Amino acid sequence: MATTLYLLRHGATAANLDRPYRLQGRRTNQPLAPIGIRQAELTRDLLALRTFDRVLASPLLRAQQTAEIIAAPRHITLQTCEALIECDVGDWEGLTWEDVERRDPEAFARFQQDPAAQPYVGGESFAGVADRVNPFLAEVLKKYEGETLLVVSHHIVNRVYLAGLLGLPPSRAKLIKLANCGVSVVVRSSDQTEVQTLNAT
Image 1 (cartoon, helix red, strand yellow):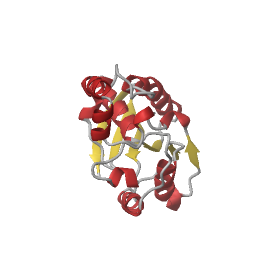
Image 2 (tube, rainbow, N blue to C red):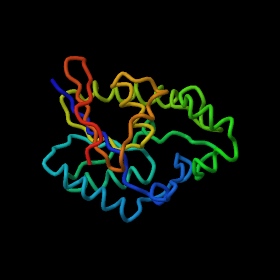
Image 3 (spheres, rainbow, N blue to C red):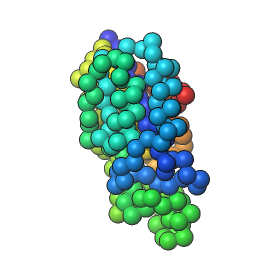
């Protein structure tokens, strides 16, 4: 019996829209920007013909708002899951990559080379994200066998999880680019889990 997981990145916030964009982890809890609300509404319409048995989301406001907009017509109670919270980007929260490189060029270079081994300074590594997210979502797929699930989380969380399913280590998760409200579809059947759709918008 197949279990289907629709995995979404939240809609855009002000930090996402800044150019250059600003790193946004879990220490600032920004709401969706007006365009992020519109992205969520368009995604709701895109998925209008899909039936979801349950909706799970990160506890951060941007993910909660996105999930609530998409789930509203279905009258499904939203489940908040701490394991889905965004990566802790530590002391680099709110900075641009240019700021980070200027402030701490050595840590910046190590992170760019291998974000699984080098955490954000004062924060979490991609390997740490994989250690908490991958087992959690594997258990969700088993626990809710045969159901169709909507999960709303964050860029780093989603790309690290999807990287693992695509045979990439956490160190190479940055190769996966996910748009705000990008939809990826993961299907588990006969103990095999595969990515069927990546970043549909």
